[in-house]
Length: 164
Image (cartoon, rainbow, N blue to C red; front, side, top):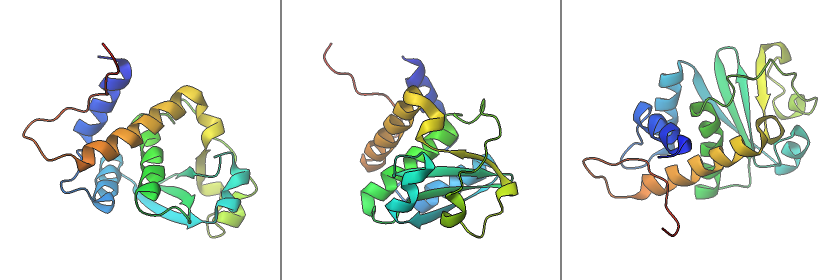
């Protein structure tokens, strides 16, 4: 079992996937686990482009809550995937060794009601690095796959094996 597999398994044991799948219920469970609310904020993709997130999604960690900002044009499974990618960063602990980061100036335009002083981290693609981005991407992919599988009594979160 790879380290990534073990961490994904831990994440799904800590916050089980709801059956039937429901993103709202899953976010509520993640929020309960983390002891802080999670809100979603859809904005035009052009507004996200200058934040360092590559235009898909952005995690804004404040002192007492989290905000996931995502492309308003993303709908259905696409929006779920972007949101789950940011949740992956949360549950996989990708923020734990980050120092307090300043909010990009464009964040004021995206979230004008948020005080810049309340922000602990603004974590986009540039802050996480390639390995953590890949982990969050695989977390989102696998969560979406497992969320659609029929419920079994025992189901582990295992990565697909290619070849032997």
